Figure 1 (cartoon, rainbow, N blue to C red):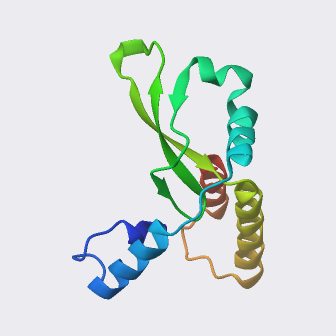
Figure 2 (cartoon, rainbow, N blue to C red; figure 1 turned 135 degrees about the vertical axis):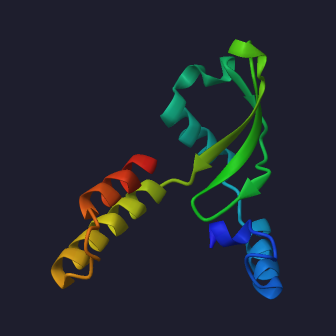
Length: 128
C-alpha cells in the first residue's frame, strides 16, 4: 500500500491512486510524548544538540512518520534532512511476520527454486 500510494496514475489506476493518497494523508501522527520517547530511545538524550526537528510530521504511513529537520553544525554544509520515525511496536510486528512467513514457506515448500529464503528474511530484518 505504501509503495502504491506514492506512484502516479501511469502506474496505478486513477481511482486507486486517489484512494491511497487519501489514506496516506489521513494517517495519524504520534502524540508528542510517544514521539519523543521513540527518538530518545534511538538517539539518546543529546539528540536535541544535533538536530532541530519539526514537531509535526509532513508525511505519515503505516509504519512511521516523517519529520523535517535542520542539522545543527552539519558536516559538509548540508543542513536540511528528513527523518522517518517508526511507530512503537512496528519492528516487533514485522519481525513476527517474517518469522511466520519463513515457517510457512518452509513447511509448504512454496519457495520458488533458487530463492534463498534465509537471505530474504535477513535483508528484511536488516531494513528494520
